[in-house]
Length: 267
Ligand code: PLP
Figure (cartoon, rainbow, N blue to C red):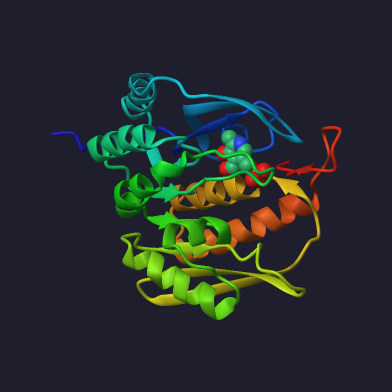
């Protein structure tokens, strides 16, 4: 009998998220990040936003059976090393994505619990928080909230590093096996500290704070973690390398629109 042939397909990473017509965040940031990490990018559009560097002007959510068809098409053909979840818009969409992931059982799922854009636009309906907690956190390899998102998921304020540490543990207790809690919103000077909490404890990474108004950092970070996991890096290395990647992309950021808002450099 012949030995089974090795799988010659390159590794793909699938983003299930929202589109940003301005090319700075969402699916567009995800695909640029995947390309920069040398993995093939797949996308299932959960929502479409009409958006520029000053804000979101309209949102369209396609029917969930069409979203599931996109996800199924990707799993039917490609060698998917990881899935990244971004803007999912509503509880109904979250439920459809959870059902699809339960069907296909990908090795890694990075959940970016997108709720409100930096510009203030709501990207997840308020009544969808519970679906995010109960349906998505248990499916995650790692969840990557910023501080306002973690506060909404937990229902309490996070004002310092000790509170960040407690919040990361509390989010794990909600069912996510690992949490990368981003400290960029913590007030005060000094470094930005991100905390990864996993079964072994905590890993902290620190970078000098760049005082820049940037767009798409959260999407880029979660996509870089997913690409690194798909390429076989252990979670702690995948997260540390992703934080470095976002920092470098921010340093090279540019302003494609009329506002001061930076889009990250992925080249
Ligand atoms: N638009 C889409 C489709 C997004 O997924 C996100 C964030 O995840 C944003 C906009 C907001 O990005 P930012 O808060 O970095 O401006």
